Length: 423
Image (cartoon, rainbow, N blue to C red; front, side, top):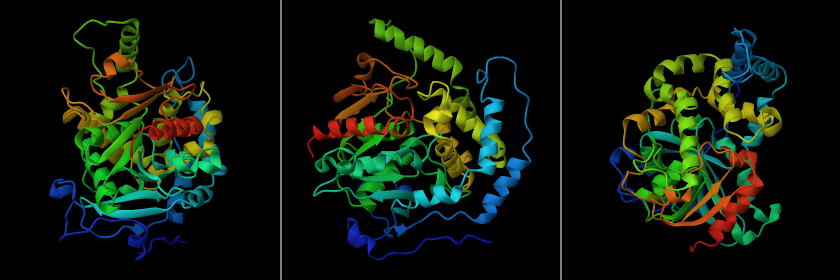
């Protein structure tokens, strides 16, 4: 039986959400190219409703999986471990309840709006108190908007988590164009620079926030950085957990022991951890066939990164929880959006820099350095790109996915940083 979609127009949305006046079709405050413009149509409420046939097909594919052998040697050394993946896929088939997790996702206020000809899915959750600060939260790869499901209530309702209501945020969490419910087959592909423009249009034009702040990790940190570089007039401040600095050795010799440490870390990253980047950034179409057709292949490709890049001490089940891992994977599977998420990597290798080599991010910047982040450069190298760092926190735990790994500490750091930034 087909599971009906739940998506209706709500004319009261404009009363609840400030939207800038539209002067003719496709008018924008940003001066963005017409190809990335908003047509003025109000966002419509959206809820996730995956068809039963999609879930039935998934179970059939899991039952029929054809497994490779395991390379002899240390488990996980050569990629996702066979024994672990078999156990997880058995749980996925036998015990994982998508409908339960779908209902949890639908507790958030979700909408869709067309920007630049692409339908953008986003969460828009109001904060408590009299003057919550508007905050854009952007995710990365291989994540999704779901990565923020623990952080959102900590930021919108700090009083329920030991915080001060005066520190509340109204949060906007888009599925990046090409990801999840911001994907339809055949749509235009976007790099991070274009995605950043769309995010700015969502915040300033669609939702009517003439000034806002941004937080992100992975590509989300680069989006926040790009916004701070390209649209400083819109940004009050940014808070990030990954820095968009050049990933090549400087022509000059390291000046400090910390710079030497970072270059050793960078050498290891470039040699051992960038294979995924090169494949997705050079031949994205070829890889898309395998991962769109095989849920086992999709899970293997994503899970290896969650294990390698997190502070999980080798146990991702204990660190994240199987339902969390699988719900994130499901957002790629049920939408068919995996190949489209490769495009920012292609654009990174073949297009312009996110922050030009001689450019800098001038807006107030907060940085939370997590001990298991993929790269942790020293401040002496970072300040060339980010000259206005107001807060540099060395977090006690966490890795590349801090909103899932350590949401309380991350929320505390975000609140503390923005508390010091003038509105």
